[in-house]
Length: 268
Length: 368
Image 1 (cartoon, helix red, strand yellow):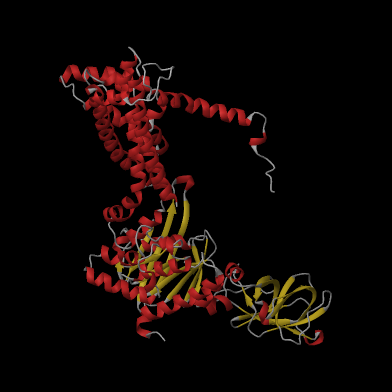
Image 2 (cartoon, chains in turn brown, orange; image 1 turned 30 degrees about the vertical axis):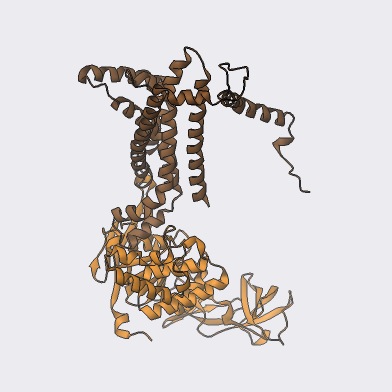
């Protein structure tokens, strides 16, 4: 049989490190999921199978409220961010090279580089000033903050898609008498849809997951699911939290799977 | 035969056109001072090595690039500054650029749809085009589901469907294998004859250019070096570059013995004098060396005592229909001879001395 002359899997300790890494990644989550089905209140002693904590979570009005708020916020922020990111991606790939182009990439990707807590503090001060001036305390601040934060995550897959798309397709459309708007409508946009969907889903998951920014920006009664869970954990940790976390995990997995399927389908 | 009057009318007129990319020190002149007239209904080829500007010129005609200076008229109308969607010109792209999310039929109908033609007309013309390129069976397939040769046909049909005045073809055959390429060459000639549309064809393949074109413009470094029929380009190259780029060629540096009308007598290695054609406007100085050119098939083997010059065989390569014989002339210059083969002919042996006779009128002086 053909054997590769060089393969890292033959290095000593390779298997051990690999297994250890996967255990570290998945064992805590596995434990969390298992104890969400515990019949007792303990996080360490198994007392039999039960769905009572799921029932409790569903009956809990607050959980329902914060979940709906989280999903609404994620959909709104990711939706706006995807539109902005699509325009930004077109602006950075479908124009001639212009001075400062690299700078623009860096500026768009600010949230990837600035520590979240810095952004959080900055937003806290900024938002507080606006609140004092206008008296407005609605969800607008969270939507704006989440949108800004989601843009780079939505931007990256859209830009990647545009960069691999043959620019001759748009040239061909123009050559065949399409106006710039028609070329976009009939050629660029349909081919960009997978990138836009991927961008939206990434943005959605990121918004759903964000704790730090929400914590700094939210007004009273604007808890999202992650900040609510964090608040609850400061008191007692019942397996109800495990149940909520497990459901949250399932939702994230579904989105990530959809993302994977969409991108893989386009690759074929 | 094409209509003579139609052939004499001008389709594209380019004057003083140049294209510069970049600015200042980084500026690169892709096209310099191009003057070119292309006639209605002709098969016109831009031939040259990569980077010579032929594709840039095509893209300027298509409208993907705007000229830096100069004028470009299509059918008498100035189009410099206009976008590709405002020109009666369609392009067949090198990689075909078929719309991957549309069926073959929708690809072909796209141009007519954008022109706002009624649905029935789009459908009828699409059907005609599918028939023209023999792709009726594939109408509902996506581009990824058909072969490279079929994609080529669809790209042609898509570009022909809006009945452009001019069809631009950017090395459309370069992605095909040899057999398919030969087939498509014939197909292109047929389509051109059937539609009567002016074809401007870009290629780096000199054989393709010679076999398909009515006229060829040989380009190098952003300029047109020579423009003429394939016959003229092959048999009467004016510059060394043109002679070298097209076909195998022998160059010799020979002294001028005397001049006569339209020609110069040069002294061959070995001492005999022979006439070489002079390009227009060139008057060499007697006694000085000039570059002369002769094609390898325009030299015959002869007994050494009846020959104009002699050479020693260095090697011979058998190609089937002919054999290429590499010789060293008596003054040390290398020389290639192409000999037609028959079942009787023997392969020349290295070291043998061979006499050479030049076909009358085959020797030409080049501009440097």
